[in-house]
Amino acid sequence: MRKSSNKGFILIESLLAFSALTSCIFIFLSLQSASLQQSAQLQEKAEILRVLYEEVQNQQASLPANISYTTTRQDTYQLTFWQTNQQQQVQISNENLQVVIKSED
Image (cartoon, rainbow, N blue to C red; front, side, top):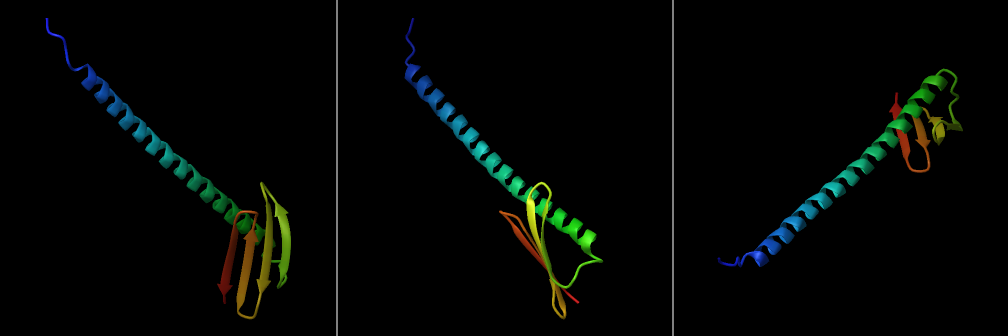
């Protein structure tokens, strides 16, 4: 009976397969993490735009030319409405994000 001389080859082959599998898992987890962070940022932006829309709808008829106030929903938001001769602007911000919308007549 002949002894197999493949023992070292099988070990190297197993280590290479394990390192390839580990690399694939690491890449997948990195991409998944980046995707989750981007999703959280988009959700935060959608939330701030939703609050801005609701505040504009609630205050549209009664807004003076310039007003600034704070509202609290799931977070605290600072809203500023101002108007010049031909331009209206609104700004909403929280601790992480700021959105400014300008409208010209």
